[in-house]
Image (cartoon, rainbow, N blue to C red; front, side, top):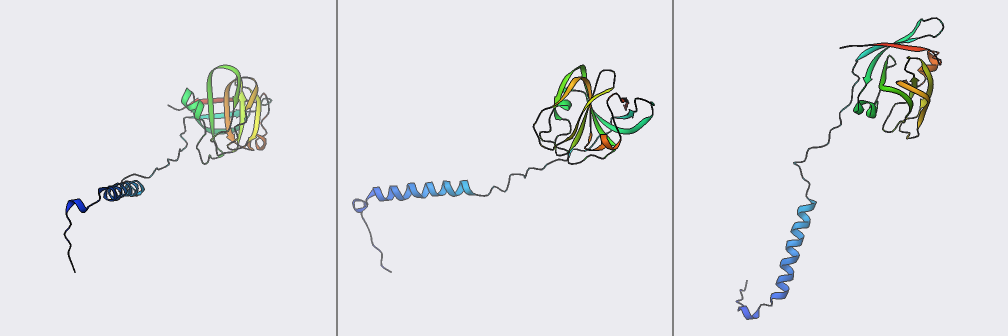
Length: 177
């Protein structure tokens, strides 16, 4: 192997500058592409049903109980805006009852809701005034009540027909503290 000695006047600084800048840029590019092992993966949390009350669906003509449901209650702004969004399932004996401070025409939609639902609109006297049956999952289409409502009950799709629910049937519920 032969060694050479160069004096500083023999070195051309421009090619060395280009090599230095290229090396630094390559270092930062590789650093940016590095897999960052310290980041924690995003974990999704399943929202589970919380029984907050019990609701009876009552037949208009006979005052007989058609069905008794465990209910989750949506009675504040966050709960009424979120409803059953991000839920994967709901048992047939479970429902969500929305309670509003007054009766007015309301409209619901199925954005971010994976469950097909029957939406039951109920007036201030706790009588059913209208239905939106078999609401499609993830559909942002407006589903209006058509009449002033103070309460809305969401159940699994098809159950309102299976149970024979009709306009003027009513509800009663108790809140579990």
